[in-house]
Image (cartoon, rainbow, N blue to C red; front, top):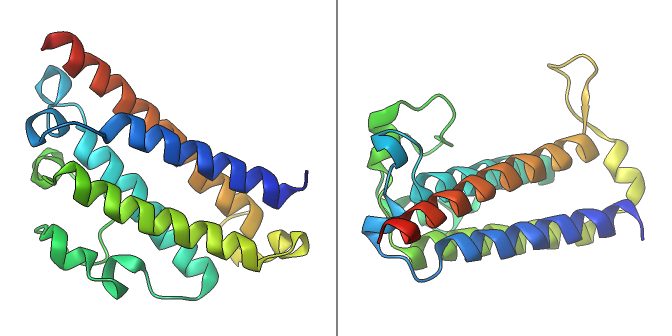
Length: 169
């Protein structure tokens, strides 16, 4: 198994986790905020998908699916098109209201684009510098691991919220 196989496997696991956290839930469950202020499932899944879309598109030199495929219009959120969720306050988080099929449709499109991009790479590409704002500069491999790590954390948080919602119903 090489590094690209590992990345494909990790992103595949994220897909399983995302679907497990979202499938079968209604908007009330998707927007439930544990303790009244924690991030809800809808925001967590939207955010992890936006970050993945943003970072993979940037690395691939392509337009984000958010705008290229019209997801920005379908979601109709009160944010700038480039918003990914970083730095959002509680009101912004609460504004992410979307049904499960919309969240999963966007996630699945981004997941497929990620796998397609990984299929276009060879292992040497993972050493390419993609961000010189850091010391040391960020390679493509590090960026993809960072995206996967962020995805795993947020998918886990969404699974936790789902458990709380299921336990309170």
